Amino acid sequence: MRVGIVGAGPAGIYAADLLTKDETLTASGTPVSIDILDKLPSPYGLVRYGVAPDHPRIKQIQGALHKILDKPEIRFIGNVEYGVDLKLEDLQHHYDAVIFATGSDRDRPLDIPGIDLPGSHGAADFVFWYDSHPDVAPDWHVEGTSVAVIGAGNVAVDVARILAKDADDLLDTDITDNVHRGLRAKKITDVHVFARRGIAQGKFTPMELRELDKQAGVEVIVYPEDFDLDDASLAAIEDSNQIKTNVKVLQNWAIRDPRGEGKRLHLHFLHRPVEVLGTERVEGLRTERMELTGDGDVRGTGEFVDHEVQAVYRAIGYLGSPATDLPFDEDRGVIPNDGGRVLDLDDAPIPGVYATGWIKRGPVGLIGHTKGDALETVTNLVADRDGFAPAAAPEPESFIQLLEERGVRYTTWEGWQRLESHEESLGEPQGRKRVKVLQREEMTRIARDEA
Image (tube, rainbow, N blue to C red; front, top):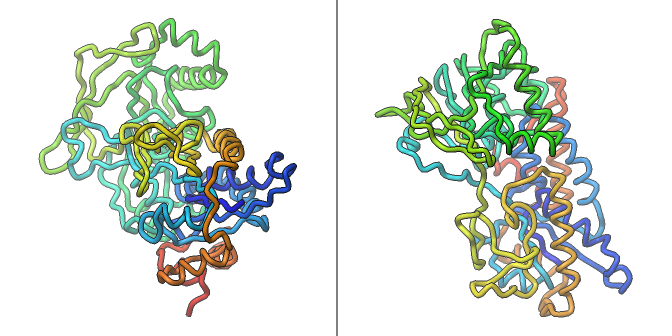
C-alpha cells in the first residue's frame, strides 16, 4: 500500500510510524511504502520552527522523529509545496491514500479596534521569526519599553518570556545571528500578559508557567485583585492537578515580597482586551475588567483600564490554512473530517483522503496528544483500504520523475542529514550544538549538495 503524507511535523511522522507497525496490515502481509512531503527543505515542522529556542527538552523530540524517518519504509521529500507543485489529483495518481498533516500556521484574528496598527503583531509571526523560519523576513524590530501579550496559553507564555529574556541567555541555543541582534537591541522593561478569564482557567502548563520566574533579572508580578475563584474554578482545581499547581504557583507569587529586579513581567487576569490605542501606531491597550459567572465563564463589569504599551502581541490561538482541492472550515481552521476521514461538501468521506494533527482537530493539546490523534486516523485508513481506488502509478520512482519533470528542487532524507551536519559545524566554533541555516535557498542548496 502506497501512502502519501503532506506535512513532515510530528503529526505526519507519527502517522507514518503507526502505518509501518499496524498489526492488521502486518497480519495480512500488506507491505507499506510511505512518502512524507513538506513544503520546507527540512522535516519536523513546529518542533523545529514553533518551539521556543530555550526549550531544548522539547526539541529533543527530534531524536525520536529522526528514528522514524530513518525507517526503510518511509521516504522524506522536502521543498515540495502542495497546491503549488502538486494538486490532489497528482497525489491520488501516485498513492492509494493521502493523509494531510499540514498543521496550524496562522494567527487566529482578534476583531477589536486598532488591532491593525503598526506595532500590533500575531504571535505566530514573532515565533517564526525567533525560530528562524526560512519564509519569514530575517529582520524584526522589537518596539518599545512596555509591551502587551494577549493570551493565556503556552504560546503567550513563550512570547512573554522571549520578550523579557536577556538575548545573551539564548546564545547556547540554535538561534541565528539576526535573531540575537534583534533581541539584544530591545529596550523592554515591562511585559504585560492579559488573560480574559481567571487564574483557574489558564491554558498554560505548570512547567511553562514556572519558567517565567527562572529568568535572571526578570521579576514576575501578579495582582491579588485579579484573583477570584468561583464554584466552577474550585471544581476545576479539584479535578486537575495541572490547574491546582498553576493556581498554587500564582498565589505564591502574589503574596511574596518584591525582589526589585530590573525587568518586570506582569500577569493580569480577568482583563478582556477591547481596543488597541493609538493613531499612527500602538500607544496603549484598553481592557475591560471581567468577573466570573460561577460556571467557568466570565462577563464584563463595565470598568475599563488603559495600559501604556508600545506593542501588542496576540497569542489567542492558531488556525490552519486551506488546502487546495479540499473543503475547509474557516471558522475552526481545519479540514472537515470524521475521525480523520476528510469529508466533501455533502459531508460524505472522500475515498482515500485523510487528515491528522492540528489540521484535523484544531490547535489544541501538546505534541504527545498527536500520537493518539494519528492512531484514530490510521486505524480508519486501514479499515477503509479495500475501498481505495488503486494508484495508477504507485512505483516510488514515478513520483520522483514527476517532480523532476516539473523542475521541483526537492530535498531528501540524506540531504537533510547533510544540512543537519552543516548546522552542527556552524555551531562548533561557538561551542554551540548547532546554528540554523536561515535562508531557504541556502538550505536547499546544501541539502541537494549543489555548488
